[in-house]
Image 1 (tube, rainbow over the protein chains, first blue to last red):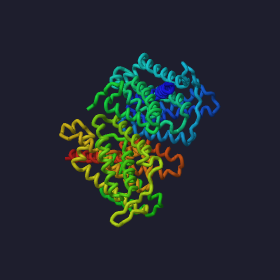
Image 2 (spheres, rainbow over the protein chains, first blue to last red; image 1 turned 45 degrees about the vertical axis):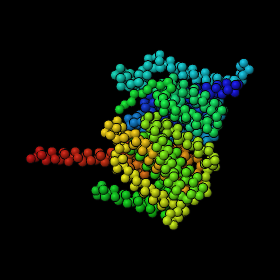
Image 3 (cartoon, chains in turn cyan, blue; image 1 turned 60 degrees about the vertical axis):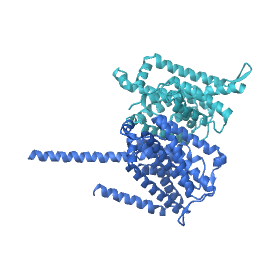
Image 4 (cartoon, each protein chain N blue to C red; image 1 turned 180 degrees about the vertical axis):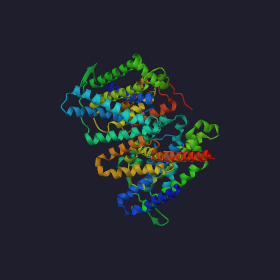
Length: 291
Length: 329
């Protein structure tokens, strides 16, 4: 039982991180039809921005801020201006292929420039264990979960309550009508890219202390984010949260109770089942088919 | 020189290079050329599924793996080469057909993710089912084939064998895309609803597009196993599927010669960049990105656009000349 609670807890912690990544993924899809195959690498890169800054002798809080700023610049602004904008009018597929090439590029660059080894990454959240009703509970898991969920709630509030957030939603739902209503569509799309960059940076800072910073860390994370986004529903933020948390728990329980060899397969079966029987996702609305 | 003469000269040069160039290459060079021929076959299959029939598949690498494992397992059991080859094609055809069913329900990015999941699952089976696939240790100890008393043991002999297979596969593709089937596939890509209303059985052709494309992948894998003479799970990760997709798009999806060019870029370019050591993949990825930004329809797409633009210019010049002539009269 004890073990089970801890499995659920650490599942929720990784699941919340998956949710962060998946939300960014769905935001990009909604506003600019970008299927970002480099999303996993986007989570891997900010950790190395921070490590590089730390190596210059900066304290951790400054390094985290620099890492956040750099990832918003590189993974937000540069990604949009250099890659997405010129490709967008040519359809979904060439852009998707381009992000695949980008993922190779990011991975290999980090490997060559920084290191091929896994590097330890400092945590800014409390660590250790807490005895709670006789149960040994990891503080790190709990704090990651709380932190990630707070970030998601803040984003939700921003999108639903502020004028900018509503304009972003309008852009996502129908860019043409939004433009007619005077929404600065281009700027809203740029905001989405910045938010995505901030989300992946946050995910990176949360997950790297647990799984170490490594150039290949993005492979599993990217896949997990896709699955979370699809399982939850591609067009809903709450879908990405449900999908992320569900995936985190399923993944952890499968590793413990089914088979470590096939732990990777269980989320995939979940994915196939959802796509075939409920393609709009658990929480999603059905997209209208265009003929 | 007219265009057809240029094209013919170019074609003769390429064919000549494919036949005679490997004679001057070392063992590794010949291996790379054989790999190019094999990957071209797999990319051709994907080009049928994606380029002609418009169904996104991220599983072609898994079919190459299925073909390679079928041949490796059966050859180790002492079945020669030809029967395993046939079985590999039949198996990948059948599995491809089954993978087509999701495509009847979902499209575009959803389909991409179903096939992506399939490809990852197949990799897990290769790695974990040790009783069948020997897991991470891999299968070795099978020989390259021989036919009609001719052995294909040496690298250069096996290269000509793969080249022959490539010619065979190309002939099949050329026939297929010109047949009514090929037209039905294109109709499926361009407008499935209209195709259906015109009496094209879209259901059957979707499944067929997947099955034939996958069988080409299986054929390519069946050649890959004897080329490397060792089969383990690592080459058949999702990365291979993504690479094949990149080859098709970069070469020009929906163009007959797209996969040839794409495979040349995907297989040969990284090798030419080896001088850059660890940086070669970085340069390769940059190259692919810049290429796609410049020519999103692939290299052949841009060439076609250029030809079309020249024709338009020529036609408008002719019109202008004609109208000028009319003015005089």
